Length: 453
Image (tube, rainbow, N blue to C red; front, side):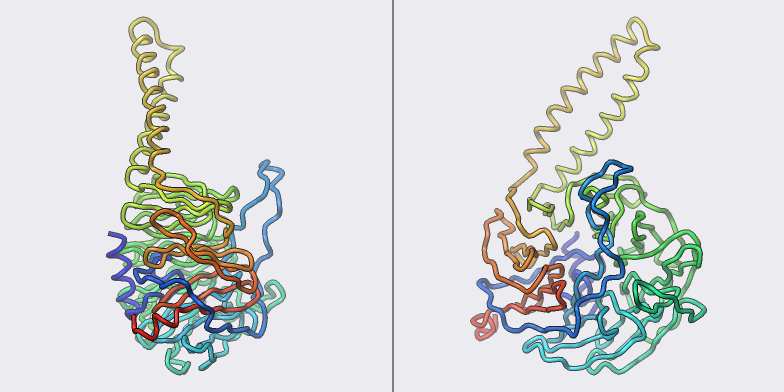
């Protein structure tokens, strides 16, 4: 089902493998197209300046909660993340307040378009249209071929500016990027709950508003995601919200770990990594399905790939979820039985004690089976990002990237890059790496290009 969703999303956004952040509206970070290793560096684009982050990194420790070595949760603009379509590479810049287009074969800049504030999120490509939001509170639609303005739309009712981390930004910046599905672009504007935040749907064709709703209790930040029926809105250091795509009605706020990494699988949302480096999976009704240790996750048919700060692993997804769900239910039942024991006597107490013993034995079996769900596990020195290209996982590290076999975790290839490799993308036989220095590296395989594979 996920593979079908990925293909449909790619078709909707123009037939490319990577027309938006992490490849599709579900932010899966997976492309069906293989890369042919070894890759060689074809070009490096050095931007005019380093990314200017909207927020500093987290404090090292939360002493009040007794949590040490906090994981970063607002990481959406640490590099110039790219989208790719029709032989072109697109990115927004928080350094020079422009949207840029590069030739995918040479890295040569083809055009750029100024906005009035930092562009912190990857543009989304739909046919020959590029749609991107800016900290100036405006959503821009440009021609992908030449950067000409097609339309622009301010989401909030006013143009008020305030200082924001050394820059002048709108009181209602667009801090969730744009997600597109079925000819509709979904966006948000707003950062300060007391000043109202907006969630809106715009027609890709002309920017006309389909619906727009306002809220006074949320701070949307982090890439939007879409499933068939729902729009998912990350909310800064809080947990994500779920909206109905048809009318923008807010349905619920999810519980679990906060953070701005998220992916959709069917209509479940996996998000995190929270303060402690853990992710939550919640289903359509908002119930928590599972919790995982990790910074990132890739989900394919039957297999989940978990990426922590020190490890990369693969596990049998369906079996793992079934076992963890059973474990949750057993633990809840045991808690109820244990609480009732002091009030029981005779046969009822004996029956409860037998059930506790039996469920304890079953929990032991479940723990063994959960460990058996792990297909492989290996040390990974690249904790910053991970994507899947065909049958290979690529992980980003400090000053280097490494490729691993998705089948068994074997190291396939590695290469140096300039800086921390926070952004990875793959399309048409090429791998693109965005780093915190503002560099964008392109790797390809010349022999593959010569044979047209």
